[in-house]
Length: 159
Figure 1 (cartoon, helix red, strand yellow):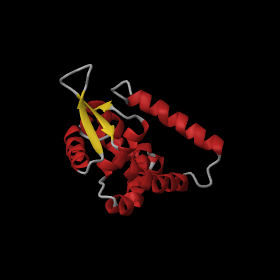
Figure 2 (cartoon, rainbow, N blue to C red):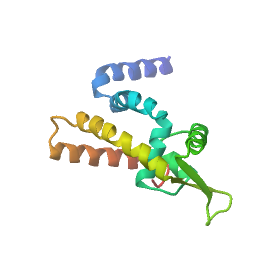
Figure 3 (cartoon, rainbow, N blue to C red):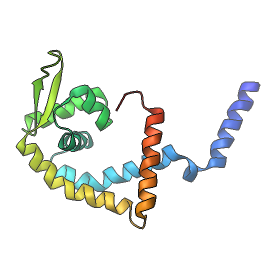
């Protein structure tokens, strides 16, 4: 009976918080809308969300080990592997054996991959800017500082 009471209290707590007060729900909605806003442009370039994320990360941090790329891109290893296979087949990335660890590979953006990313970036930037419409610079900085603290609180990797 005590377990049932605890579950009832937990359910009631979410109802009291409300979806508008539950950060994970809001973050998921925001990212879902962000990805949906880019879908038309990604599809025209032959990109999935996983491929887009890989190109975006590599544009900022080229030559990452595959595992690290997966962490930054927030993509499961199997999904990332398929995405990289496709990107490599399209000539957008190349993989090289890691000189520090022969068992690992590093991923690099090719000039063709950079060109595709450069075509997508204005759409990514516009979607980003739309999210921050009407939000002051101080509010934006506070939000980013808070998000970085939250990530530090929950992350399991150093990055």
